[in-house]
Image 1 (tube, one colour):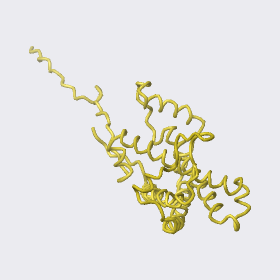
Image 2 (cartoon, rainbow, N blue to C red):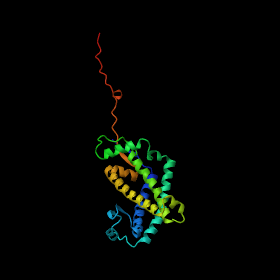
Image 3 (cartoon, rainbow, N blue to C red):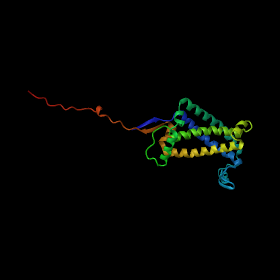
Image 4 (tube, rainbow, N blue to C red):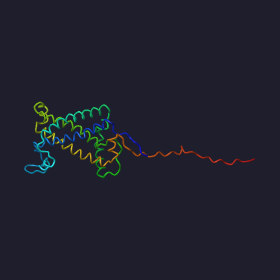
Length: 239
């Protein structure tokens, strides 16, 4: 038997769907800014394994020479991102939703079982819960990353006015590296998160849109005590 079960409150869904496009646009505008000083790469010495980003990328997506546009979008969206994050954290604290989201002493063991299940090593289904350990760790990490992005962003945006913050983060160059690294972290989170949503199926996606998911509930079998009994009447004896 199918049953509708409430999963995500309206506020959580709003925060989620506002944050997704805002963060995506912030990453894009950040790339427009990064073009002006694209020094980061993976490698050592004169050997480069990966450069962020090759010239062909800038040309294909028309990223070059849009520094002012990127800064304008980035700083406007920064306020939306910060306000949405602040409201989200406040709501989870007031409503008690944080109890299902924040990792506990069982989360890392649960996360490991989730990884084994996703890799096909664990065959038995995972125990039902609103957020498994892997989700708790991932979602809490993203919130902390958001706070880190705001702090490092302020440090490189106003390094003189926020000199104490810039120094606390290791100086301007280190703050910029940390800001860039957090952005790479968001992209990786997006890739894994979307892959998991696709893997979980339409029911899980619908829960974040409508707030409800459809679950299979086993039909209740009537007990023997509740079954009607038919008594056979014995023929009466005649004198």
